[in-house]
Image (cartoon, rainbow over all chains, first blue to last red; front, top):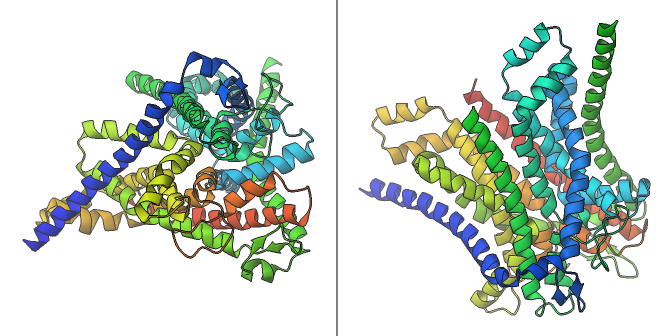
Length: 281
Length: 295
């Protein structure tokens, strides 16, 4: 009887924990959306900040984050996919591939602020790119690399070997097989991983702190060698650095809503691609 | 002739793909070298013994006090607190997901956990300021809720998805035969879970905790926003703390290039790098223990 009571108590623990985890998510979303939605007007997302950022919109931050994500994509996706192709298609298991895989796993565990320092030392200072969206985008690209490689490799692994053997038997070279058969077939899986990685990169703040993000930019710029505003940093700045924090709180909530909606939208696109692919298989 | 050209192209591209693999090694090496190089520059000015044993981080001082000790204690305190919350919550939730939840409920809960993982850290930090902070101030009757406890709560939220996902994999990896053997011996479902399945999944659960801890130790924005950032030795969870990550974030923007202070930030980053690297390697070691089930 006592044993039964103990086990019952344990059961309650399991259910209780799950309920708490769900409540955490619920509280986060409820608080941000209930207080942020009133700020979310068309003017808010289409206008420049005015009156020392106590009024107006967040258009430069939206554009900055979009530009940044674009630079990250151009740099990290081809590179990451190429590395995954090498690991899964060309290389035989060896000391070298073990070292490459270990490096990738360890890169994924490095704190994002250290990527920020590395971007500062490498892109801003050594390559003389200055504090710019190019430096920051490349830094985020480095941060994204391990995730893109890992998810792409998983997508490649799921393809049956018979597919590769069939084309090779036709006398087609390995690169042609990869270009015309392997990559197109694995595309949905690769896209899912890439989009999820980009949604993470878009929300990152620490790596862009010293590589180019700015407090305030007058007007809209899409130049890659200038400083920029970004949504996550804008939220940080409005909630800790602004001179009238209480007054701009609604704007901070609004920025949080836009940031979370952007990230969720990317996630939903990724889930949709994954769902379609599973339905097809 | 055409064939040869195609084969040449193939060979060249293969080397190109291989280069990208080598670059990932160079990237890890480059990050390590950059931290090491700048740390050496720092330790040529500052005695390493003072760095590790002093009690003050005060670079603005004329004599510049550079001791990592208070920052390490702060980082450790906040991360420890976050694990005290996230480990039981995460493992119990994972056990519920894999052992108890019907498939339909799983189909709702798993995306919910992925949603939690997708929320940017700066948004969690924001909630630390507007929601958790005032809550703590009210409950403990203190003026300001920006302290280690606040950071721990937020970091536990950041670490939860990692811990849940990997723990769930670990519990799922326990072979069905273990459960069947236990049930056949007359043990009920509960006893099977707590006496057989969870002990068998322990290496994987440790891996989950390690990777969650690695995440918490390296998190910057949430602790920067929610812990108050006082660079003094904390006496408890209700004290304001300043972690290694937050120190780098606050000071790197203002510090002049290649001064002792500049190098000092690289030195504390190097220590953080070594800590997270060891934690991740330890996690990987335990995760490999999982694979024996699949053999």
